[in-house]
Amino acid sequence: MSASELPAAAPSVPLPAVAASAQRVHGAAPDRWGQLRERLRACFWLKAVGTPTFMLLFFVGYFYLLRHPAQPAVEMPLTAIDRWIGFQPWALWPYVSLWVYVVLPPALMPNARELIRYGWWIAGLCVAGLACFYLWPTAVPRHVVDIAEHAGFELLRGVDAAGNACPSLHVATAAFSALWLDRLLRDLTMPRWLRLASASWFALIVWSTLAVKQHVWWDVAAGLLLALAVAMPALHGGSARRRGDIMAR
Image 1 (tube, rainbow, N blue to C red):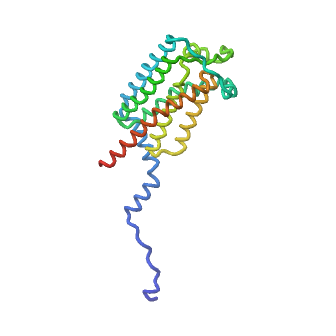
Image 2 (cartoon, rainbow, N blue to C red; image 1 turned 45 degrees about the horizontal axis):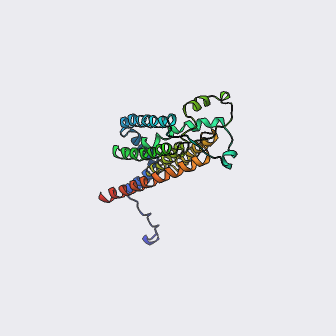
Image 3 (tube, helix red, strand yellow; image 1 turned 60 degrees about the vertical axis):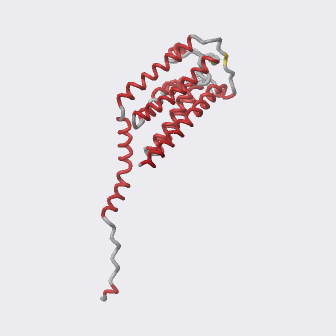
């Protein structure tokens, strides 16, 4: 057989390229989960002490205005949505889960600078909400239901009375957290199902505020608008600074 009749040799692929390809295929998921663990460990004690301290300070202001309104509260009107969503006792669990959900964005902050910056923005949101409660006290109509039959509701009604209704800070802090959490998960290139789980959790929290009759639709709408008004400049500023850091490298 002549040399011209021999089969052509397959083109050789450099071993580093093969290794890099294998790493992209097999190492992508472990790497991003590793980055997630690094985020959780970053500034751990600052997060562990700062987050509950922030919550404590918020509740001091919240309950003071709840117990000492500057003027009689205005009762918020009901809508067709409020009448359509009936009282659901089991919705208490997603309602109280807010206090787990709002911990997630600060827990994923990569450094002290970003953590403090996040703290200032959410503090601004809370102060704006408390200012609304002071200047325009509001309350929700009491839902006629025998709360003694449902565990946990007597405590909820005793602690979180009908005041401080509009805007719903329950919804506003959940929406603000959801927007930030989605950004952080995208930055970490986490799986889409994790972002969908976060969005579903957020939606369940919003629905629960209506289902446990702690808020009406107008409170929810105002809470969403407040969250968007604060989150949009906060997230835009973070994106611009990250682009500047990348260009400076």
